[in-house]
Length: 159
Image (cartoon, rainbow, N blue to C red):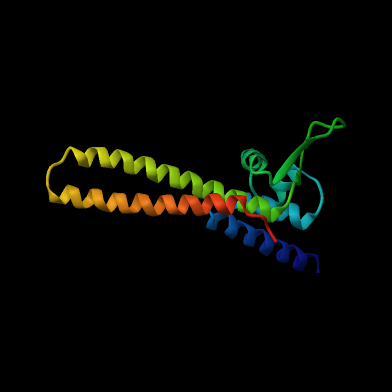
């Protein structure tokens, strides 16, 4: 019975890992969220490491990003020297923020890269370079449209 519960918990952790991975984050980020959600209480860094099978160092690094995203809150208790962690804020809101942050970074990176490529192409004479420049311009316009959509999404309230 205890073993069955543990197996179900592991499947939940795995599901969260897959979601994190699908939006470009480490599966460990998802597993940490899954562990905290399933256990439903404040856990020490060591307890999270034990549940996920990762080292305390890996957990600590992943917690830094999750804290920046507003998913978790780190707690230091005066009674001992351990680091404790709890879920923080609305999970869906945090997921929305993580997705929009990732998209915004990707959009900015793409636009910067296109600018560099355009400068190179402008120095190359011929119709081929003109065609590629037009293609880049089209892509830039579409990415700027996507940026507008992501900006709206980041401001949208959740149901």
